[in-house]
Amino acid sequence: EVQLVESGGGLVQPGGSLRLSCAASGFTFTNFWMTWVRQTPGKGLEWVANIKSDGSENNYVDSVKGRFSISRDNARDSLYLQMNSLRAEDTAVYFCARNRFTMDVWGQGTTVTVSS
Amino acid sequence: QSALTQPPSASGSPGQSVTISCTGTSSDVGGYNYVSWYQHHPGKAPKLMIYEVNKRPPGVPGRISGSKSGNTASLTVSGLQAEDEGDYYCSSKAGSNNFVVFGGGTKLTVL
Image (cartoon, rainbow over all chains, first blue to last red; front, side, top):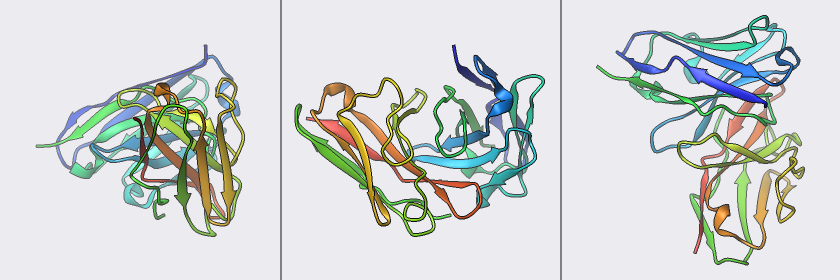
């Protein structure tokens, strides 16, 4: 079964850091771009970042550039999102998804709450 | 990286058709055939309903269709059923690189 499972969410103080993980299974991870998308409370989906299949290219939404870093470990079929200098507005459910423009497989999400 | 524009809500009675619009610019919706539509129920994983403007993934019924004219994409749900309720989001490739932008979402209610 094709599956993505996120982990690593939690409560963190403003200015703190958190690392999200996404474990992939059921497909050849190394063949696909991967994406992080978030949904803030009461608002819609927002594209956060994506990374090329071999890790050689990554892209970020302006609001997280310089603070978040997307990476992957193809040997472990895993995707990561390192989040630094967290702000209250980063509070959201974070989803990982397969592909860049046609996100055909999604995880259930992991919740990040930034609050003092 | 401005969000695409969707109506906040749409509704229809069972059996009717409803169309949801998604308006962008020539730098996203109008410039590329990489428009996708997703159905999302809170607490669940979003589900891909349409990709590349008008293609349906396996398992999505034929009464769900997509189209595009200029800078506006549309999702049409025909023969509305209760299961069609949910939040619908469009997305598009944005710019000449590999950026993506989502719409603000439309809450579809089956009356």
